[in-house]
Length: 109
Image 1 (tube, rainbow, N blue to C red):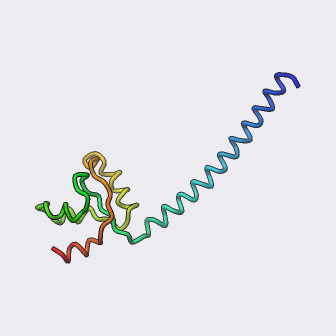
Image 2: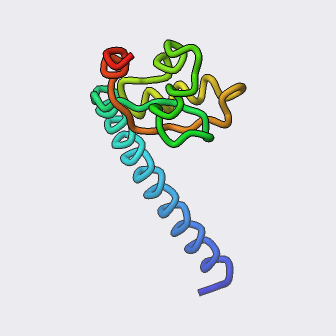
Image 3: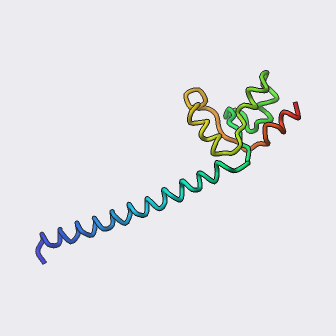
């Protein structure tokens, strides 16, 4: 086998592998999209809170505007994550924590 033939054979192998990886990526992208869609339906409250606090309860205790805190509670972690992306310019020092529903905290106040 000549050097040129070996190169062509290796190039063909690489093309085949790239094609396989593209197909695999498509499958994984579809799975990821399905999981994201499912996670958006979950009723699992999470809040976006300042990193200085470990829980929304601690943030509520020290906050003069309780409704502003409650507005940072989302139906699930996926929605909280989406909110963190859209608010990133002023909430880059916030993080997502598990919490109870807004109604739970409203009943406590």
